[in-house]
Image (cartoon, rainbow, N blue to C red; front, side, top):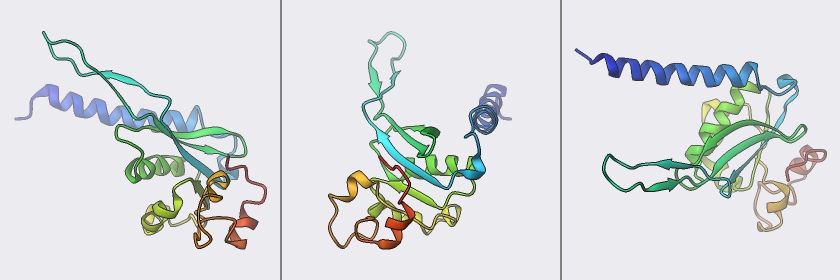
Length: 169
């Protein structure tokens, strides 16, 4: 038999996840989720949280995260999804945060991110991201990429037109 405490913990975690989805969908959604067509993502390593890993009788050793990964609506500057980065910024945390954002904003067809030239290669193959047609770099980072980078609006007239009135900073 499974101990009652384990059943309670699994139920608690499941309910907590459902509660987070509910809150972000009903209490803190974008004003008009149907109008959100672009998302911008970036990791913020300067905003860290600490957690305690001390065991009984031992000196406390506080560890820090690698900040947060946030995805926002560039038109309203509203954060749509936020995820702690336990490890340094990586594709898994971007996948998880983008998935959460797309649960709220289903009509998104553009995701700007400073590492899209690497991230796009695997992300556009995932079924959950099939509606995203544009994978540009944020405009600030596009200048540091070479002339062959297909995710730069500087090299692609198609992306330049798509990002014409979008603030990706």
